[in-house]
Image (tube, rainbow, N blue to C red; front, side, top):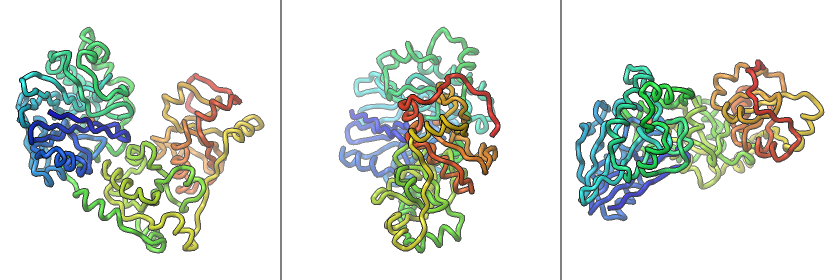
Length: 471
Ligand SMILES: [Fe+2]
């Protein structure tokens, strides 16, 4: 028996490869399915099943492409109604893979069709629980995402989750290994641990949601308190996972279209196309195509794309570090942004060589920022999350989290000068690039963000929550 967790940091997502004898199964594959097919080939195995723990909201799963390429059957939990051929399992149903079995446990709550898969080994012993978004390490799946689909309130869904945990998960043996669909950083829960697996026994002792003393009412209150609004792309990804999507091969081929500077300019001027620059922020600050948006590939790329680009069918032309174009297109497709129409061939160097203009972003060191702050009353925008801002911030700074820039943009006065910082200098550049593309010209980036500010020691900091300030 082979069990492999294939963890993708950008999405904090765990997919699983399972093999026994010459048969294999994949749980919750990502959009690009080549690695799973290669893995099965290396193991001389045939992929029999693609198990989906639920209709994911935070990424587009590769179940359809993987089924088409491998001949595997796609399995969903009870009540799932996808728009394509799939096996809709029943509670307790067992699936054979070589000499082992996977038993479907219907665990509604996070979503109605949510299912966990319990692995029973060659000797008949229950060994592993693939817990999807029902049970995370240190947390459980949020119960507010499927309200519309289920026609239920989040409290009602939380109540179902309580019953699922109590009746289906708690009775299982303590030495079972829990392999969840997500780890720390995922927006599918509130407070996931950075660990990516654990024993069920340890979770029973440490996970607040598995506390036997917690009444149903208290559980409902705990899991529904402090939930942030989900990213805008979540329902759109559910739609693709449920309704189907274009093959990733087609998406990739389209995205890999080389565009000369002339064609790149023509397409982006004529059509409703977003220029997305994915290079390092230092490169973007130095020079970029006027009007382009920065979201660097070396950050939490896909979640930021999903949070900030409102339309999933947005046409995108990319400026990437040379040789990383395929990675960019793949990571866009993982969250359903399939309309990448090509990339700037030769990158920014070719653009400049062709005589076209570039612009830079005004950016200052923390040292200069400290001097300005000491001598004048300046406007400071802190674009970190509210929780980060609440824990510590510069006295007088105003919090406008990057996550909600599309909603808060209207509150920023165009004629005022703002100094913008985040935690490390990634989010502030995204923030300014978006505002610059909308005609704001007085935003100045603070390099290195809060990490550099703290080291500087010349700022008055506060740990108290500032009242909301109108700009
Ligand atoms: Fe989920």
